[in-house]
Length: 212
Image 1: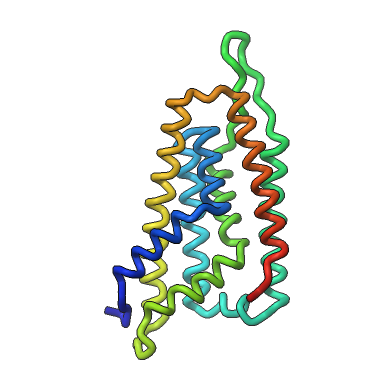
Image 2: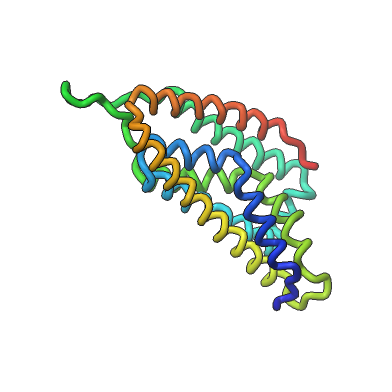
């Protein structure tokens, strides 16, 4: 249907690719570990929204510009790296909110809407995601398919929905692990800063990434 072939292979490959760690997974795990599964799910929904942006952009041919224009790729790459570094600085400088004398102070929570927006931007501003869809998805579309753009969108939606299921499971698992370990605010603050350090590395890596 739609000129799509080897759908089962596509689904399995997509799941394996989604499981691979990256800035999206780190963002989800950090928000779940510090604020609970709702925060992790908000980040996952934002990442899924950003992925849909890439899917429709690639289907309409816009992402092809990133593959052919060095200037466009560099601009998006540097914006993405700058935003990841901005998140990293926020995590590294995170402070604990003042609590009562009886209860240990907790990290100041971020609004779910802001976490959702972070998920969108970390994904949309990563040009490697756009290039990934251009390289991966067409392999499962017949060259003679009458509606290649529609087939691309269908496959992209399948990939993204499976990815969001994994991301929500990751958010829930991380939150449950946090509850069982009963992490105190000092540990969650350390986790925030350790993840911030990883984001610094990811931001620098993205800034140095080459087009091909």
